Amino acid sequence: MVAELAGGKMLAPFYGTSLYVWASTLAITLGGLTIGYYLGGRLCNNDVDKRQKHLFFIIACASALVIVMPVWANFIMKQTLNLSFLTGLVISQLCFLLLPVTGMGMVSPLIISLIAETRNSGTAAGSVYAISTLGGVIATLLTGFWLVPLIGISIPCIVAGSLLFVLNVLFLRPGQKVMSLLVLLVLAPTALYVRNAMSPATDRFSILYQKEGMLGQIKIVDFKVTLQGREITTRSLLVNHNWQTWIDKDNPSYSFLYYTRFTNAVISCLPKGSDALLIGLGGGTVAKQFEAHNIAYDAVEIDGRLPGLAKQYFGLKGSGNLIVDDGRHFINVCKKKYDLIIIDALLGENVPSHLLSLECFNSLKNLLADKGKIFIEFDGIGDNETGMAQKLLYHTIQKAGFNCQLFSSVAPDLDGDVMYLASLGSTSDFDTGQIKKDFYYSFEGPLKNFKIAFDKLPEELLTDNNPALDFYLRQRMINVRQDLLRKQNQSFLDDDMIFYY
Image 1 (spheres, rainbow, N blue to C red):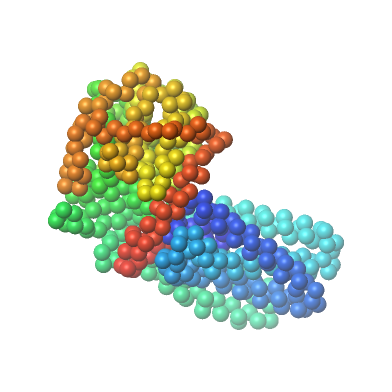
Image 2: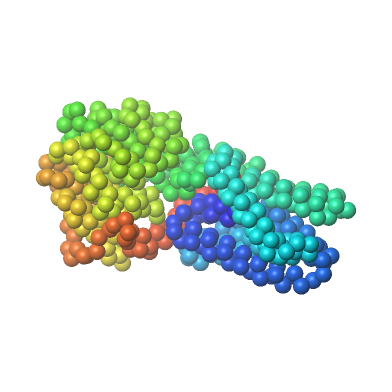
């Protein structure tokens, strides 16, 4: 379980955390165990002495592979960047995850056969699988909730693999304890990798903060870019190497993400004394807009690390109420009324389907004050895409009883951000909100100038039981991560940035 969990987390900065990644992780883990159970069962036909030698050798090899897995995985994934997303993903995991898991799978049949020499085989099998499963539960909880957030991915692999290696030598081969020294040869490259991973900077990128966690890897990076002839020091919040927040370091209120011009226009139309709810805090860009317009707000963020980081690195004052919770859970239990609700929880290839379902919109009705509105930022429609996901969301909002306007950040084209402004009454009272151009964003004018429309809406709806966004956005998920692999991640690799530690 340590190998499986660590293997999935190692993939995140390279390949993300989409359903494809975890499906691959589970499939290769189960496939490795299947192969291991079969091969281990075949070895049980040997005599007792040979089985003991096989068991010792297999555990030694499997534990050594776990120890070197961080280094080996990093090397392999660098070599697969130029492959297609799914091909690179599967090949990477076959190389660094399949062998250690297969080795672990071979252990159980051998142990059962040895115990069965003196006990009933059924009792032996039940005991071994009960103990191994309990160990997996404990290892998963310790690794996921404590070790990875506290000390990263590599060290748990080193500790688990080394412990297993040493115990194997001490208990299975008591006459050859000196072999435990061989673990040092395996430890050396991984220990060197961990030391190098702690380096805070590369030639181009200055890493101010990096932390692994169950909700993803977070990095805060400063780097210079040249835009419109101006050299600017920018600061980015990366979640699994996805751009979550991107600002001008010397002017933290300035965001390079187009949709923030629209949130600012909508917020500027709110009457004095309004209350707002933000689902998805991130680096605090939208929350800072509430603060700039003196709007009271509640901000809900599932990742408890982000509120503190938004204050420390991105200029958030934190005058609002910052709540660590899942957005859907908060919506279900909240009793407060809001004049504006902004759903800003889309991140790269990860789309929060549970926040965009018919049931969720019906619940949001109870949170809206009179003339209250909901603003949702969503991705645009790329080349060769039908826009089915965007149309489904629009149809679902309408079916929930809302009037809805659509906007594009590059209207009349649809390939920029597509945004939704929904209300139980009129939505036109925000039409005069001004979009302002700047050196990075060349469009301007009243919000109504950015309206777009969909034709031929589908009959299908997004519901909790039919989270169809995952299906209709499957190619987009691949394209987003593949684009990151070949552009952003390649530039990081060219500058020798460590992807995980």
